[in-house]
Image 1 (cartoon, rainbow, N blue to C red):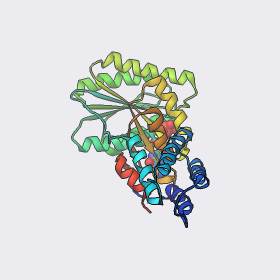
Image 2: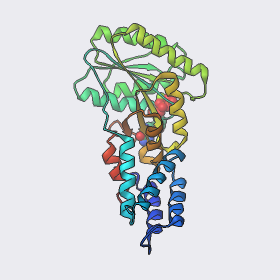
Image 3: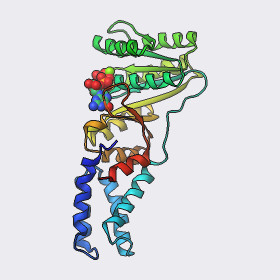
Image 4: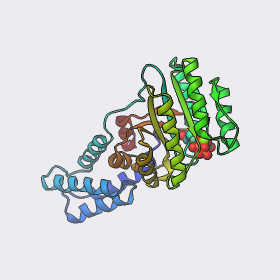
Length: 295
Ligand SMILES: Nc1nc2c(ncn2[C@@H]2O[C@H](COP(=O)(O)OP(=O)(O)OP(=O)(O)O)[C@@H](O)[C@H]2O)c(=O)[nH]1
Ligand SMILES: [Mg+2]
C-alpha cells in the first residue's frame, strides 16, 4: 500500500525546501511551513494544532532539521489516529448496517466483507435493502451469488425496512452470525432519506434487540474534505460506529482521513483499495503513517 505518496510527496518536498540551506528557523520559515500545510487537505483545525507545536519546538530548539519536523508531524498523526480498531463481532447475531452517499462503495464493500467473514468461518447473510433502484438490488444479488452468500431481497420500490425485517427473521431461523444490510446511496443533506435510515435502524433494534449492531459509513477517499461533512451528518443522525474509506487506490490525497478522525473521533475500520472482492484491508494507523512519509 504505497498509495499516498503523491499527496505526501508534495508536502514533504515543500517542507524540505524550507529547511534547505538554513541552520535555524525564523518566523519567515515558520510561515512557509504553515502555508504548505494549509495547501494540503489537512483542514484548518489540524494545521493550527500542528503549527502550535512547531512554534513551540522551534522556540525550544527541538526543531532544527526537516527530520525533526517530520517526527513531530508523524507523532501528531499517530496520536490522532489512535490504536488500530478492528470490526467488533460478538457471539450470537451481529447486524452490520452499511450507509453512505451514492457511489461511495457500499455494495462493493459488502461483497468484500462478506467474503472475508465467510473465510473466517462466519455464517453471513446479506439484506439487499437498496430497493430504490432495480439495479441496486440486482448488483448486490449478483455479488452474493458470485461469492455464494445467501441474500434476502424484494422487488424494486419495496420498503427497505421490510426487507430488513424479513432478513432478520431469516437470520434468526438460519442461525446466522452476521447479517449485513446494503442500503441505497443518499445525500447526507436529504432529511427524508435520513429518516428512512433511522427507521431501518429502529426495525433492527426492535426485532433483533439482543444482536450486536454496527453502523458503518462508507466514504470515497477522492472527495477530500467534503467527506468530513458527510461523516458529520450521518453520524448525527445514525450514530456511526466505524468508517470504511474506499477508493484509496484512486487518490493521492489522504489528509482528510486524519481530519475526520480528529474532528469526529469515529474509528476507521477498513480501507478499500480496488474494485475486486479482495481489495479490502484493515486500517492500520502505524502502517498508514509510515506509508504517508515513505518516498
Ligand atoms: N478504485 C476503486 N473503486 C471502488 C472501490 N470501491 C468501490 N469502487 C467502485 O466504485 C463504484 C461504486 O461502488 P458501489 O459499491 O456500487 O457503491 P455504492 O455506494 O453501493 O453505490 P450506490 O448504491 O449507487 O449508492 C463501482 O464502480 C465500484 O467498482 C475501491 O476501493 N477502489
Ligand atoms: Mg450500492
